[in-house]
Length: 336
Image 1 (cartoon, rainbow, N blue to C red):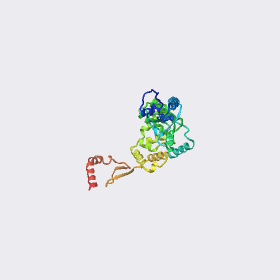
Image 2: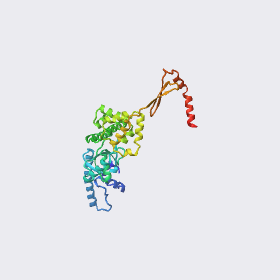
Image 3: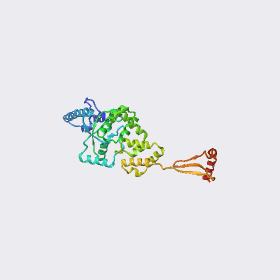
Image 4: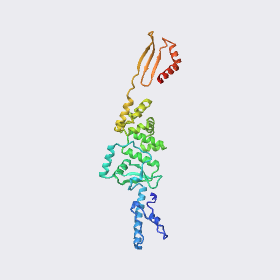
């Protein structure tokens, strides 16, 4: 049954109503009105039942009014609630997740979540904030306490961001990642600033930071709660070098990497790419006559030959002209 008809009751008209339609008219699950009148009851019993239904209908209408104003807390089936438009978290540690489950198991869900009627499915809801509480209640197999409010997409993300800001609940990189994903979804910078409680300059820095970091690395590292803007900016600088970025992308595939805490994962990647490259070995090639003609620099990724034209001005040009011949000889050698 569509949720938008949850509080509607058909008025008696005296006309013959099909059995299915009659049941639909009398079913109101939120108020416990899911028991249709049994056939064959005396007229007095039917009248009394209709009075009870009308009374409950009035109470349902009052709850619906409060829900539309966001003033009432109701219990909902967690299986009817979908995630927000944009997920603002990069994961939750097992310890925190277990602690929240234990807290709700012992003391109940003290703070309701905020949901809205799903814009694409009348039978479902969409959470604005309270994802962790929702997950914990699901794990416990309980109904979730929620406030239902009609929200536009803009109102939803502003509510979501402001709730997290008020609880100081997101790490710096989560806030940056949330901002970047909101912009990718087409939200204006004014809406994103309102959601995160930042000014234009701060928001620009946050979105620019995410643009410089591979999404795979951000998501693999996770929340990194103790790591602030300066450290993330430093990592972004280091990863601009393709070789270091490739090293980092390879490192996050290691199963042992995922077993670390988020802060440890950040530090591991930072240390990996911060390690100074091995200094190149420098040698000099000397001809049989004792002339030191070529300075050679050999690093991990390249070898450089520097010809001393002061000794043999034409030697460098000669070598360049014969590079193809040398390369052909090399290919022949390795294929033989």
